[in-house]
Length: 142
Image 1 (cartoon, rainbow, N blue to C red):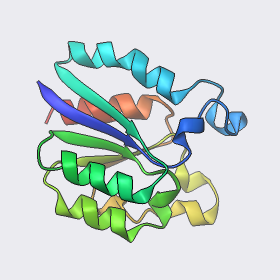
Image 2: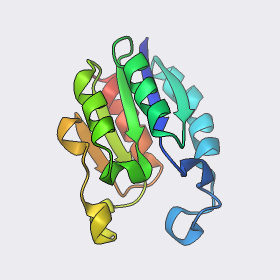
Image 3: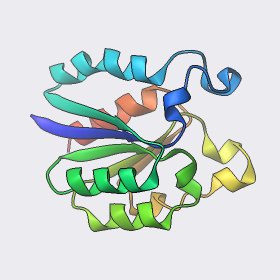
């Protein structure tokens, strides 16, 4: 069984309530929890973790990055600002897929640059919740 961490950064706990015109009105947590049985059927054990704190995200990358089979990571706003998260991803063995609910390249100019994309195995942006499913399936097939 493959072990995959879905790691989410700041404010993603508010999806469903935060800017519904942009992110929709469904909770990301609810969608992810509904998907767990689907992923189990693919022989994938998924662990979910969200934090608003950069250090907690780094700790999770390091903890899972040498023992797990992959990480699906939506770093939220840290995508555009955190060299520390980039360094943590570069240091670990597990492949990381960067995921964003919205198309960051069609948003504000400051959101169009990802500091972490260059050290990730792949990037999925702009297809909503389905991006998480695509990333899990990609990692499961490796």
